[in-house]
Structure formats: C-alpha cells, structure tokens
Image (cartoon, rainbow, N blue to C red):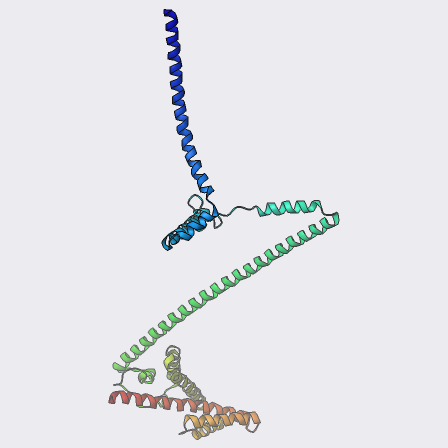
Length: 362
C-alpha cells in the first residue's frame, strides 16, 4: 500500500509539473497571438470603414482640421516624390557620379532595337532583307560622310584661327615696332634740336640750325628772314650738306612735314641751279636756256600759293590739249613747283611769326 501511495504521489507530481509547463506555454502563445491580433484588428477596423463614414467625417470636420488634413496629404505626397527622386541620398542634380538620369530606370535601347530587328528579320523575305541591308549601308555611309565633313570644317576653322592668331601677332609686333620707331625718331629729333641750340649759342650755327630755329618752342629767339632766302650765297658743297640735313629732319619731324617737304624742293632746285652756274663758268659764258629759266622764274615772283596753283593747272591743261610745247611746258612746271614751295614756306613762316607774337603778347 505504501509503495502504491508513493507511486501515486510521484505520478501526480509529474502531471502537475507538465500542466504547469503547458500553462506557461499557453500564456506565452496567448501573448504572442494577442499582439498580432491587435495589429490585424486595427488594419481590419481601418479597412472596415465605409466610404460613407469617410464622407461623414469630412463633412463634420472643421476648417482648421480640413486644412491640416490637406497639408498632411501634400506633405506625404512631396515626401513620396522626393523619395522616388532619391537613391541612397543622391538625386539627378546632386550626385558624385555626374549622372543626370540617376533615378531613372535604365533602358537598353540598342539591345531592344536589335531584338526588334531580329524579330522583324524572321518575317522578312530575302528581297526585303537585301533592301534593308542596302539601306543600313547607305545610312552608315551617310554618317561617315557627315563625320568627314565635320572634320574638314573643324580643320578649316582651326587653320583660320591659327591664321588669325598669326595676323594679330604680326599686327601687335608691327604696332610695337612703329611705336619704338616713333620714340626713336622723337629722341633723334630732340638730339638734333639740342645740337642746333648748342651750335647757335657757341656762334657756329649751320644753315639747318637757322631753318629749324622757328620750329622750336623758344619764343625768345626768332628768325625773321623767310626760309628760302637763306639759300642765297651758299656754295654747292654747302647746299649738298644742307640737303642731307633737310632730309634728316624731314624723316624725323613728321609734325612739320609740309615745311620740310617745301624745303627739300627748294634745296633741290638751288643745287640744280648751282650746278648750272658751275657748268656755265666752265663754258665761259651764259647760255640761252639759263636766260629762259630766269625769265620764267621772274614771272612767278610775288604771287601767292593759290594763284600759282591755278597757273600750274592751266599749264597741265595746255599740255593735255597740245597747245604748249612739251619741253617748254616741263620747264615751266619745274619752275612752278619751286615757286609753289617758296610760297608755302612764306605762308608757314608768317603763321609761325604770328603765333609766336601772340604768345609773347599774351
């Protein structure tokens, strides 16, 4: 009996332990199932709302609630759009790959076209295949020609750009060279004027120093004699030396170009006259040609530049019409050219004296 009781007690204890374990497992299952059931019940309740309930809720909401609901809806929509435009924090406009189509789906267009063409070729006849192949080759040749044309245009454009660069470089160098030459001419002219002042101060002035005196800025020292009259009584060597000095000032002093051009013309005529006089002295008498030249020169004395210019036009017209003897007319034109130069020197000399006098009076 005692052994039977002990066995019953052990049996009851094992059953109780098993029941307790089952109870604990059941409780845990209830907890797990209850959580899931809660979430599902919320979704079911949300799904169970009918359109009438939504409409009734919208009709009963206040103006502020309606505004908040719409703002929340717009916010969710913007967030969805932004999320659709973003991949791993990158957008089409802002990504380190430089890809403006980052968020767009990749479409293998060439592969798709190839598959479409293969599918189409299966249903094409041999004639249609040959025509399609000819069209494909023609299209390729057209593209190649376009590439060649673009390359030729690009080469022409590059050649033109190189030519323009070279031309601009030449113009820049030429302008710089002209500027250097101008500065060099100004320097040599100033040195020539300085030498002329020194020679004049020391009492050993040359004829060119007297000619250039009135062209300087010194109003205190003025030469009253007309320039062309200073050629008188100069020997042939002096005239030839003076001609070299005149040509030097003529090349340097561009501001007084008219003065030095006229001086060069008068100097050339004086040298020619001096040579004629030397030949006449060697021959031992006067000739008829010299007398004719003197007569022609005397007819132009005392006339102004405008009057002499009109006479020159008349002589040229007589030559063109055949009225005047060509040889005689050429002698007249040579004398007129010298007379015009002297008249120009008179006018320039008078203007210089008037300007210097105005500065002194001012």
